[in-house]
Length: 448
Image 1: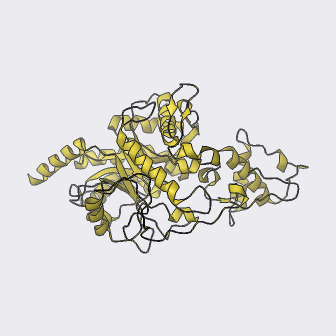
Image 2: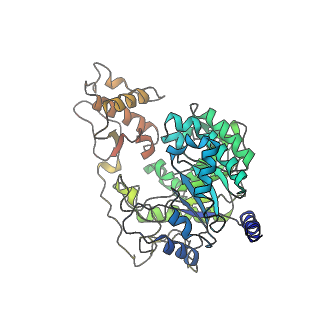
Image 3: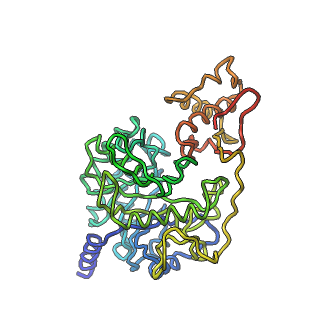
């Protein structure tokens, strides 16, 4: 009887709470506070009432019991094929949900992370089946307040500009049609991770930071931020497939406060996240989806000193490990001002920014250690894409070489420059790297 009462209260809470601003809680640091301290801090010192984690860490899930903060948990991409089996799915629910729910308000289960971007063929082909099977297992076990979804990078988009012409990539469209059908049936959101940071260039900096407007030439609607443009591009793509009614949730977005390039600064991060909070909380929505509060999870909770990769990866946090704000974005309780300011004095020293060279220009080249097989695949892919000119690396061209690394770097950079000059378009399954050192040599000029 007591359990039924608790479940009734929980379902009422979930149906009436207006979730808007949440945060992603990563743990790749050797100096982070314990989960219990994080839970108490968020509950008593901030307005954040929802949290997303990248695993099923039982210590974190347990720490947020009776906190009033909802939790989104994530299962690994590698578990997806196994969880198409109903028995395995029920066992997973019994092990990872039943011991904690409803004391911990588990709101969503993410089936993998950016599977259609990073996953292998087995993970992609089994993704929707695993989502359906897990959803059925939740219902069988009596957990009707938990939704199942999966977050996507904007790598699923073929076009994002103008927003009204947003379309999904043809190779992932069949999977997305199945997924959108499931999300509609289960009343679950389409999770996307829009990062204007990855679309930054000196020319569109103000648009990325909510400082400048643009007009969609087709609809004549005015966009006040790249964030809104990205969301409406996803909406347009879903609508084109017949699913305009599936809600969109922002699983990740943010801006690093330090890196090797001018795109990162304390002020840029404060401006982006501060303006984001104000915009989402305003309930204005987007031009194609007006009068909405999008559930939005900022990336991320902490600066994480053990994250691999470039300096930016260690500096996405809203808070230092000592729980002092890196900058003010308007999420602290009883906070004056808010949104886009840097605390003074700064409570801890941020990682330094390396002064950029070459006037802020950047290039994409092959990462050291990438295999010849991977580089050949990168070369073939990049040169097959519209607008990528690979003539200079053909025989008798100024950049022709018998070295696959040199050839691939030229093609990868041509693709990178054509597709927004952002980290995502230089990823190439983690075999590309952005550099501020001009790779041009002799008569061979790399665009930049």
